[in-house]
Length: 169
Image (cartoon, rainbow, N blue to C red):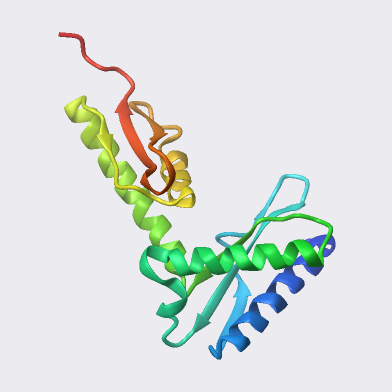
């Protein structure tokens, strides 16, 4: 994937910031472009930049349920606001963890959608991060038999999958 020249400076800046943070943490790692989380719109403009951190034994960067990775992503975004005028979402992944999690969530969403459709009863999933909830919503957005909504507050927010047609008895 090729980032347009106008946004390549933002990519290089984000990559440099992340590499410096990793160096300061004394974690030998390589930062590469993540094609899964880098998106380009119809006009050829970059709408988000994905960075994948690769190396050995980087579980410490993922943390429990990806929380450390989310925090590191937030820090990189904060630093980026001081270095560039243009605002682009930066999405971090560590050794493909987020990619595998997304794939697993999509499979889970489809399986649960079929169960909800068969049983004709709503199902509330476990609490998730905003990113994970978005993956579920997008996975089921065009599903003909179920719909999704987020409920709860803060860290307790979760996705509820509901049949579109609830039987009347």
